[in-house]
Amino acid sequence: MNWTEHYKSIREILKEWNSGFEIKALYPLPQSGSGRIYFRAESTKNSSFIIAYNSDVEENMAFFSFTESLLEAGVNVPNIYFIHKSKTYYILEDLGDTTLFKYLVTNEFEQALPYYKQAIDNLIKAQVLGKDLIDFSVAYPIPEFNKQAILWDLNYFKYYFLKLIYIPFNEKKLEDAFQTFADFLVSTPHEYFMYRDFQSRNIMIKNQTTYLIDYQGGRKGALQYDLASLLYDSKANLSETERTTLYNYYLQTIKNYQSIDEKKFKDYFYAYALVRILQAFGAYGYRGIYEQKEHFLKSIPYAIKNLQKLLYEGQFNFGATYLFDVLHKLVNSDNWKKHAITEENTDKLTISITSFSYRSKLPMDNSGNGGGFVFDCRSLPNPGRIDKYKDLTGQSKEVKEYFETQKETITNYLDHVFALLSYATENYLERNFKHLSVYFGCTGGQHRSVYCAEQTKKFLEEKYGDKINITLNHSRL
Image 1: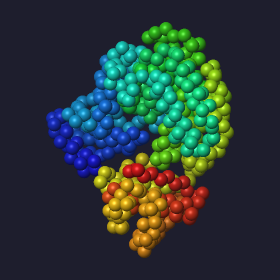
Image 2: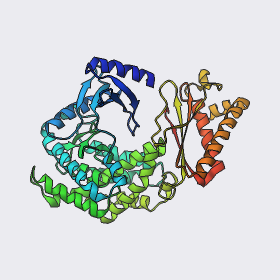
Image 3: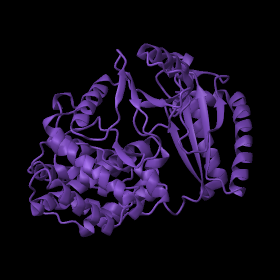
Image 4: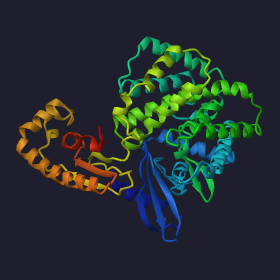
């Protein structure tokens, strides 16, 4: 669905809602790692709402149900004002744009501490009170963080991080270690509501009050997981002293709701911190290294730092020695630096190259730079119209060879593109700019735009080398 279709649907939905809401402005919000799309609608009466779109109805149904139960438990979450009959669009309370992470960027931890405490208060209500109110049968994609779910996360880490950065390991030994690790994790009580992605980007601050968002992946689980998610949040980069402050506040506060064995809680805490960090590595590998989404690549160095600290400071008593052998190999390797955007190169100009389909939408520019070059490749010869190329992409050898037969047309087009980008790149470098977005669009986002994006990356790498960072994302592949 393209932007025009979304806007048309939203205007019809607002009329159906019949709230007397007259639109002054309607615009999309930056996307995160999920497939959900959010729009802000501003009215002529100085009020605003968020319209969400998600084609995954099962995930939406979990969100609707969890929201109702969490509100009943006294947790600060956004109100849902309207759910369209399709269950793909819904209207939410607008909580603004200030996340706890964004607040941390410009403020010291001591200033953020009251908001962290509010967030922990909300978390505990969700975990302890929510478990008796939430209908876990609607949890998506699985109702419990059980052994199967844990092994999914561990294999996510293995296939989308270890293998992508070429850390060698013995498959059988690592699988055995995963089994031992998962058995230990599920041996502690895990009947509480587990938020699943409790981190600073999912905590909003509005009118000096914190609200929780993006809990649709919740399920039954252990108390330690969400606390570990918050304290080992990669980009928040908390110090050990700050983690200890928040850890102690959590233990002190949860005692208002139930008794807790602090020693047993701690025995499992580091293990849950470890499985959370490994799951995050899987996401950074898939969303960052594979999909080339910039903020995930920037998170990798912080996750490595967290893992190093955890391996040094954590107390683990579940065996699985081969897992730790592999993890030490990971943190002592430089392989991940070839993919991550590290502190060493964050001052460089980053050029984000994206291919897309005009049948859907122009991808969002999440850099804060407001956009960049958009090149329309639909004037180029289209291999997608030829049967033997239909199921291939612009990365395929056969399609590249096809474009070689159209060399005069392709070269003429790309020479103009390269000239414009060279001028802009040199100007941006001279002015110390940090980001430039480049988009290539074609009908299906599969052949011409992909090929041009790949060739542009190659050209810029050869011309500018270490002077710039480059990310490449094919939004339709």
